[in-house]
Length: 66
Image (cartoon, rainbow, N blue to C red; front, side, top):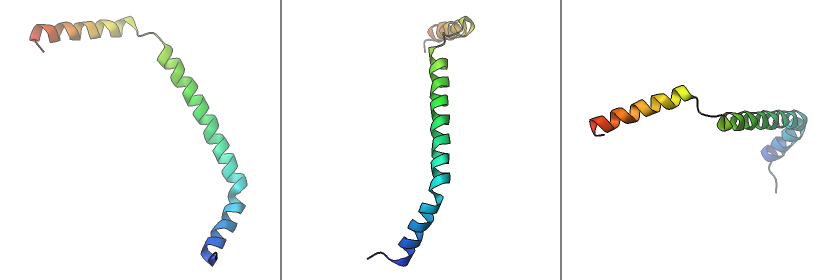
C-alpha cells in the first residue's frame, strides 16, 4: 500500500519531468564539452620552459642527496 506522502512525492516528480529532463540534457552537454577540453589539454606537449624547471629541480635534488 502506498502512503499519501509517497503518492504526493510521485505526483510532484511527474510535474518536474520536463524541467528535470532539460537540466539533465544541459548537464550532459556540459560534461561532453568538459571532457573534450580535458582531452585537448592532456594531449598538448609540455612546454620547454616547464621541462627546464623540472630538470633544474631534479639536479638540485641530486646535489642535495634527496
